[in-house]
Image (cartoon, rainbow, N blue to C red):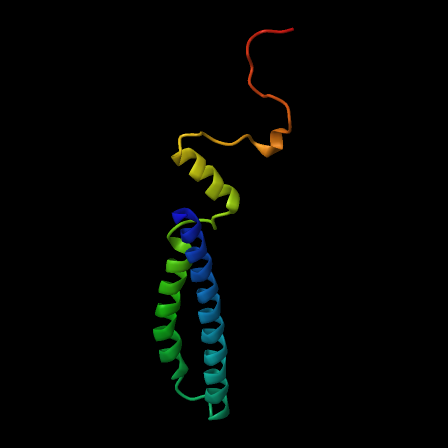
Length: 106
């Protein structure tokens, strides 16, 4: 069950990051509009964009950079079988044929 829990945590991290990124973009666009509406002098939204951007990058690394690709049910099943000593399940792409070569023809 640990692998499934880790997969769920990874999906939640990615969902949280996407929400964080959306808020970052929306709020900073709003700040830029305010800056433009007030005369477009010194670009003060840059401070918010840069500071908050550090947090967004850290959040992206946490969500996507630590473990590679998302974990699928097939990945979980394969790893669970490996840990139980059962080996890899048959490759579903191989169909019903036995791909082991025994060295005998017949």
